[in-house]
Amino acid sequence: MKILFLFLIFTFTSLNVFAEKCKGNLKQNWNNCFGTSNSWYGTYIGYFKDGKKDGKGTIHFYNGDTFVGEFRQDKKHGPGKFTYSSGETSSGIWEDDLFIGK
Image (cartoon, rainbow, N blue to C red; front, side):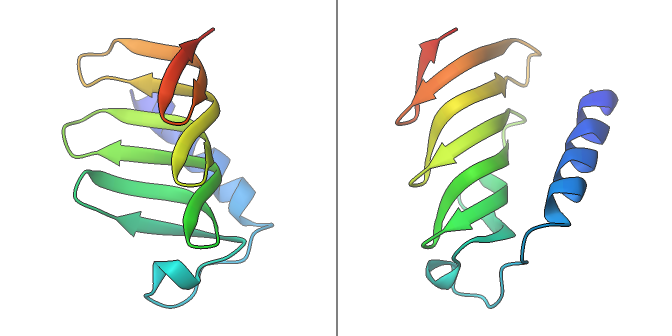
């Protein structure tokens, strides 16, 4: 788990070098930037476009689950890996928040 966490930190730190940091408190104004957003289900760290999760990002759910992958229009979409708090994983392709498979 520590290795995954360090990998995520390294990945997003290196990606963040090239991205503008999201500014202001109004998420709906965030466009083509990298930021952090807290919600009722967890914390998202990643890219935003038109105020929505879009591009590479990570969600740390409050129940201990984690998703690392691609987003489009606020939904998991593209390659990604969901790691459940139990340690089980689902890796593959996601479309509109649904796991499609490998």
